[in-house]
Amino acid sequence: MTQQPPKSLKAHRAEGVLEIGWPTGESFRLPFRYLRGRCPCASCVDEFTGRRVVGIDEVPEGIEIVAAELQGNYALKITWNDRHNTGLYTWENLRSLCDGGEWLSRQWP
Ligand SMILES: [Zn+2]
Image 1 (cartoon, protein in one colour):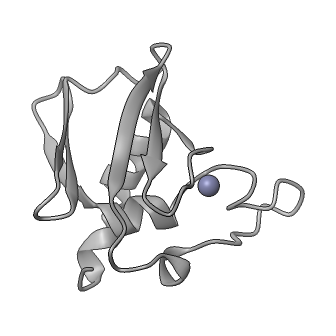
Image 2 (image 1 turned 180 degrees about the vertical axis):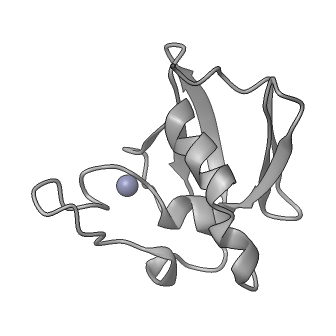
């Protein structure tokens, strides 16, 4: 089953979180720094070994979203203020980041 697209996406800049609402009625608030540190692109994750090269600890605390645009109907493309813009966050990606709850175990930023 393919992941349904989010019903709403809202960047709260003052708090540094992206609020994602799903058609199920659930909503999650993912910190920008966490999202940036989980970027799935080939310069953040080695495509041959699958090893993460740029993780949360490499992301500056002042990370912000400069722009976000839909890529077709399958992903969100985010441009960050560290000039990184090659990450495509598919709905499956975003859903698993929400469900993982990994961001809850850290202090942010
Ligand atoms: Zn990346």
